[in-house]
Amino acid sequence: MKLMLKMFAKGEIIIIRPGDEIPLDGTVIEGSSAVDESLLTRESIPVDKKVGDRVFAGTYNVNSFLKIRVDHRSEQRTLLPNLHSHNHSFKHVNYD
Image (cartoon, rainbow, N blue to C red):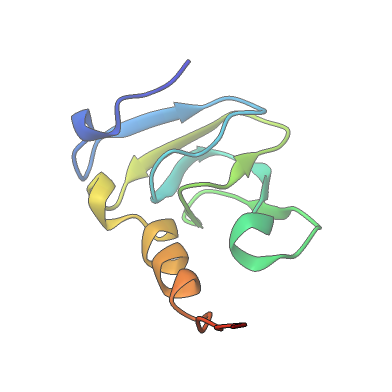
């Protein structure tokens, strides 16, 4: 099921099931699970998350239920600035 990101405001609560992508940056308020952050960190080992830990958009909940409180509006997600920065880190090379 795809979520419409524009409809979530800062402070709202989202339930993330095992296998789900975390759609927005947030803080865990209930549950604990391993989260695959390899898209952000390139680290292949999932990171254990518990109440009070931050989670980030574009990462995946691996094995257990999480309830998170949204920390930012969708246009302020962690992943977007990182991708934007990453794309601009490459220099254009002209092979002519």
